[in-house]
Length: 309
Length: 108
Image (cartoon, rainbow over all chains, first blue to last red):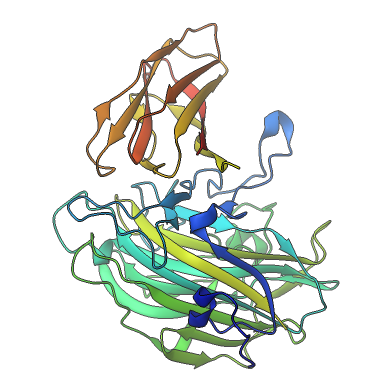
């Protein structure tokens, strides 16, 4: 990977591919990152039938890292980060996501320059709202990232999810996005026969979830145990590095880097589905966070760099 | 040029008791305008704004508005609010529910 000659000192903490496509520092605004919502195209502006309420996720916001007892945290470089948050509502980890239990932010892009590789990098942090006594680490179920991609043959979603805690028990393992072989359309959509999403689409809320933390939408990353830096109190956050590299020629993962650990993912493919209408050449990077209990949890993005090669 | 952003704080949700939107950080903005809309039948609703030092503890700020049963939209504006803001809607009950859509428009 060739290092891009940095003209902005902030780029020194990234490892972009040859073309920096977008570089978002949230000190300058939302930069096109917005709440993910379904398609309000049916009668009375309603969306498609879904067992999960996709209209209910909490809004993202520009955060100065305000805390209950600490001073404002600001961001890693500046005053503001993009904060994804959740409503204080969660279902057990083996059930479909409860209303409002997630926060999801998307940036809507398209394929340009015939890239073979695409990569997302971010500096991020996470913590629950300090609305009760205790450490709080166990109340953050997960956070993740995925690309929503469609080319001229397939729609597919390569992504990763850090499973931090399930039903109050710390897990701290990485998963990647891939539907279990053989899962039916109805099972994927929690019984909705005409569900909008095919198996392998929108793994972040579809696909059955099992007591050991595996799901029909996520597979455990081999060697993916990682004890990320949480700190010792909900009002202390540290900035962490994440990078996901995807080969869009082969439609397969290349590697995940989390802090200074790199996981080789060559040879693993996300689930390839048939094309959807009117979204050829779509490439959307998407981040999300999930709460594990009746408590808002927060995922802060200091900056995000999307590059291609 | 100023920055502006509109977020949807409550997206067509049904409420059947006192309701408050999620704690929202708006410290980057100089002004906030909340728009509250209803869909379908609803009781008279009282809509008020609150601010907070931490997103956890809240105090009333600004003049409450009312959405009469025959009306479907109101606005609440704030210009001095610190960082955390939210909207409170009172008047819905189990017998008289309301479906509400809340936007907050920020600029600064």
